[in-house]
Amino acid sequence: MTYTTVPTSVQAFMDNIKERTQQDNPAWGDIFSNCFANTLLTTVKRLDDDTTFILTGDIPAMWLRDSTAQVRPYLPIAKEDKDLASMISGLVKRQFFYINMDPYANAFNETDNNASPHKDDHTTMTPWIWERKYEIDSLAYPIQLSYLLYNATGQTDQFNEDFKTGVTKILDLWETEQNHDNSPYTFERDTTRLEDTLPNDGKGSPVKETGMTWTGFRPSDDACKYGYLVPSNMFAVVALEYVEKIYSSIFDEADVVARAKKLKEEIKKGITEYGVVQNKAGNDIFAYEVDGFGNHSIQDDSNVPSLMAAPYLGFCSQDDPTYLETRKTLLSEENPYYYEGEFAKGIGSSHTPPNYIWPIAVSIEGLTTPDKLEKKRILDMLAATTGGTGLMHEGVDVNNPNNFTREWFSWANMMFCELVMDYYDIRVETGL
Image (cartoon, rainbow, N blue to C red; front, side, top):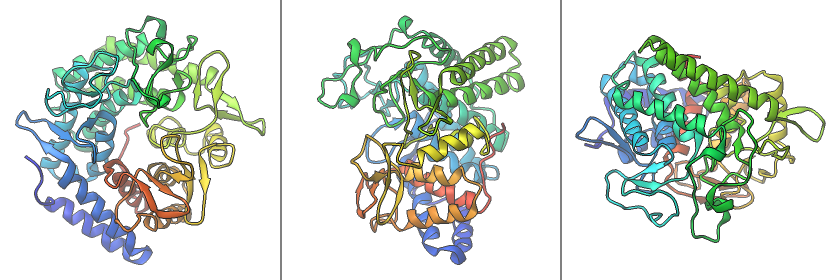
């Protein structure tokens, strides 16, 4: 079953937002309504087994990461709308159904239809898997959503046996990948695009043990240059804290709590010891990627998790000194993917052309500043760069908003919505 009309509770919420935006910028309300309704009406499919399949948008597959971000802004409404809460619970169940098939996969088909164009990748593919690029955040997001739903609504049916089995597999994997030499995972793709494959016979570039957990790919689905992606490890720390909370309050299983806590502390220590470097000014900042041997990169992800998103995820506060110095560096020419142009400025990606910024990254910039005027500037800029579509995109040309990538990208749509909600002090409570 798919949504054929917008639920009454969601329509009332959109109407309320639209009314609020009239004094600030009516375009915000128009785009919010477009995006908020679009995700429900075009990407959500409720299945007969009480689970929910969510398309990423213009690709007929479900990403574990994207699907979480797509429904997150509905959580404040789910407090009062049990059917909406049930839809989100169904997504968590579907996510863990997939994780139990293969925790290294990042995106899945709706059925075992073997529909992926990547079925010839040199890795362990199955008819269920769309893509098997291993990303830490693909496992952190479903854990996060399970807890956010519980925190918002008190709902617990998402914590089923699939969930418990999946959490065990996630802990196993993250512990294994603390020493990547022990990993069973390899990935190679026959391609001229080096960002889509891993070197070293599919194992990735060499890394030294640091306490952090290794990942092959970034949230953009591009390969990591160095194996320890710091923002994804930050998100793993947050997800492990959620595991501690769930297994203390829902399951009362002290052994899992202790295991999650130990892993969390080891990753945090690794970030502190190996993930903090100096910028050109000689100040401490968080690196983007490191390998444990001293190599590192200074840049950011245009998706989430990103260094910019650290307070949004719950890893640190907005006024953390290292975070503030990192933020200043990322919004400067020291970040090779920071762009400024005639119509916009912000963080872009190697995944899209030069001078293209990502609305997801710009929305996160707004969600992590306490400055209301800065939030308004960012919302005004995003509203003026839809290229006449009334929706957000993957990337937008800073000098010509009519040039963009991905006309239909639900994750970007919902990040804009979350920033509008944040501007009016409507937030998803993280429980941290």
